[in-house]
Structures are given as C-alpha cells and as structure tokens.
Image (cartoon, rainbow, N blue to C red; front, side, top):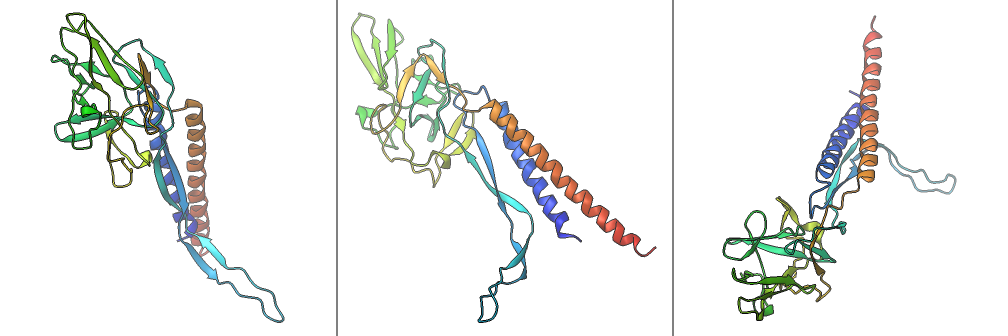
Length: 272
C-alpha cells in the first residue's frame, strides 16, 4: 500500500479532532468564565531513504533523504487569556481582572473557576450555581486545607464587595461589619488545569498551584469587579477562520487518499 494513503488518514483524524475543539469553542461562545481550546499538530516519524554523507576530498556532502509518514496530535491547549467583561449590575456577579481563580468547595473536593455568577443560599452563604461554597480567607491567611465560607446574615440591610474581595454588610441595627474576604488561587501554569465541566477546573500536577490562597489585588492577583461577569474568551471570527482551515485540510487529505486509490487501481489494471 502507498505511504501517502496512511499519511492522509492521519491528517484526517487530526483535523477531525481540531473540528471537535473548534465546535466546543463555538458552543461556549457565551459561557461565562470559559477558556477556549487550541489544537497543535506534529509531524510523525520519517522513513530514511538515504542517510547523510559528509564531504570528502573530492566530493561535497550529501543531505539525508527522508519520507514523512503523516502527522500526529501535538497538544490540546487551554488558552487562559482575559475574557471580555459584561456588566450585569448584580451584586453577587464577580469578574476578575487579572490573574487568579475563585475557589469553591463541595465537601472535600476543591474546584477553581473564573465564572463569577454566585448566589446566596438559605443560610446566607455565597455559593455557585451548583451549590458549591465560595471560599474566603480564614483570618486572611487560609491555606489549601482551610474551609472558610463567607456568610451574610439573613437580617443584613445591605452588602457590597470591594475590589480587594472584602465583603461588607450592614447589620439589622445599621452597623457596618465584614463577612469575610474572597480567596483567590494563583497558578504559575493555568494551562495545566483540567476542565471538570460546569465552568470548573481541577488542579493537576503541572498547574503550579501556589500552596497559599491569597487576597485579590495582592501578590499579583486580579481585582474583583462586582456587578459584572467575565465572559468567554472565544473570538468567533478566529474560530470561523480556523474552521475553514480545518475543513480545507480535511478535504485535501481525502483527496490524497482518493489519488492514492486511483494509482493503486492503475497498478491493478496493468495485468489486463
């Protein structure tokens, strides 16, 4: 069989994966806190036809001759660039401007997210749409083992959130008080996080989590903007361009297979 046929098959498989990622990006173009994906390719091994030869006293050097055997998937990256900000005027909608992620907990499970659409439950705790508790700084020095929930009393007259994550409220007697301060997790390599669905990420061995949660606007972390949401960082114009490229690449690889098949047909017909 011709090597070009198997090279075309490998290209088709890779472009199918690229289209899958593009489709997921477009489907989440309006998902708050979503980070787009990107696919990269690598060439596969090459078959050596003739090796390189060094120059001699009477003849110059000769370069190696190799035939490539197709492409393979290099990586599927998560691009953690800043998404655009959408104003909602809801006091419990938080957008992060800068590095860092919110920390939410479900029992002993810890997740991280850039989606800042939070709510108050029946007991006044700040939770995400799945009911996971938003984590705060316990005495403003909590570490990964901490579990400090931010609670606003049910009889509070009003509350507000500052850019440094401090949650202030006015109690039933009209006295100002502090419910807590939002904790942020910082990662040296956010692209190493694993997507867990529901706008949530899981820590991984390559994410580089700072072992200590920090306050917003400190240690290079983001500031909290109340009344707004960070939306997806998907650019539709870019995705449509990549989709056309992937479609044409897939089409070209199918043409390679068709041409290879025609050559094989001609070889079979030589006997006639």
